[in-house]
Length: 449
Image (cartoon, rainbow, N blue to C red; front, side, top):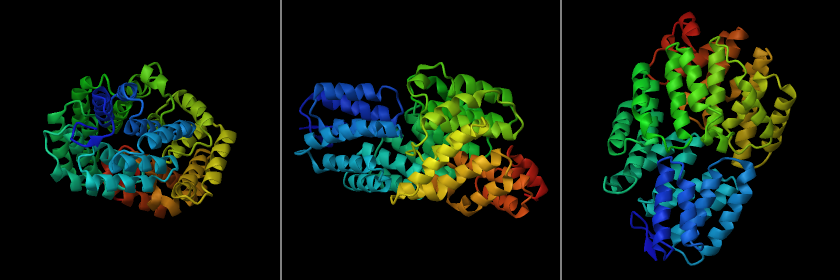
């Protein structure tokens, strides 16, 4: 039995498999496109390497696509078969994958947390828990997890920069901007190509209204992202937000067409409906239209993909974004089918189902009402769930589009109390006065914010 890069035993006797597995894990935590290729090399070197099969299942589930669950289940079956005599840590990873394929996200996180408690250098378990906690809206858990393991790490361990990047982002989402930026910049000093660290610091600058600096930050680092996966699209989306706040709409549309939604690139063509790319695109188009910008026919391809994903509720936060695209293109029948599928899924007993039924469904219904001009009905759907929308996952910057939706509907319906409610919520986050926020300036002046 060999050991991985941080000294943990792994159930393979093939050095090439162990080396390729380490490379696959590091590619994953660094958001690189070659993670699957590295993993394939590990399994080629040792087809009975159970933890590598588990990693294949993890990678499959990371796409958040219902159609891929059977492939993840096949990987799970192989992982179970080949870890029968493996270490308890590896068997626990397989248990976590089983829970994930059953859509028991909290259960999977609990297993990863247990692994990390006993093996604080298990960067794979730590990073997966960080990722899922983010999409569950559990920012406090993200922070607690990283601060529990950080004292057990040092800069001579592979993955330390990635750990600091997670510390940065968790602190930012908890409102500790100074400490967050310190950890993010420390991570970049160790690994200038770490996208999650670049992302965390970009979030700090967004929340503090440091727009010109934010553009410079991303431009200075993007040369190191040539082999990066779709997270670089999200960073270019962040750059787009900085330009949006500065009123530089041509720059935003240029980034949309040639950076974060460039349909001609191999990366987009390989996963044309990846959840994070869809969220980037739909939320930016919504923001631009609110500010009176003509976005042309850009909604159409998103709506096409939304129709193909009706009934796929695996990525809960993406559901309102799919609905935005259908509503923006007037595809009312398809939007109703999307909502009907949410209603059916939301009637289940799992935590995921309840989240869809209790939060994603009314938010998506509000999007349709809003686009059809039924503003009071949209507000009636949003008002009871406005405090629960963070449970859909996503960062403060991503969640903001849903609050702008609420604000727009409340303004159109002349519901001043609801306008006040949204402004109070928006003003409580970050340090930028609302009168300096592109989506809030007019109502903020009117209501004295």
